[in-house]
Length: 154
Ligand SMILES: [Zn+2]
Image (cartoon, rainbow, N blue to C red; front, side):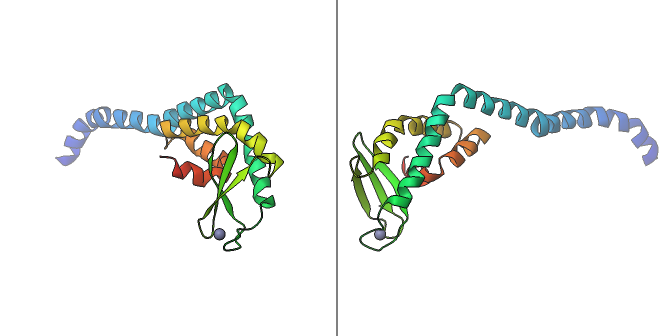
């Protein structure tokens, strides 16, 4: 009896649940990653200049980190990028969390960094638009020297 029931209902069951389920799986496993990936590539292509500036900015930040004197309070040599205005860069000690300000005259990197800062702002805005997306993950990876700054800005 149950066997005949199954053979009668089976095909119907397959059509009513199997096919929509396959559709949903297809969407989440194949189509959605594909569309998101395409969107990510498009954004990166359209914002090529920004991404180039960001690369230079990250490189300069790495160089500055190596060159800046260790913290005068605790001796830690792990400055984090913290804040900036048109002429000044504020770093924060990774050890004692005290801030110190550098003028663009202190290190030649700073002048160029301050000029490229709009690229970081633009990328930050994009990350905020879709924090869970692949694009945001990629951008966060590109902004590694500025992680403290990205977390700080609400
Ligand atoms: Zn310190």
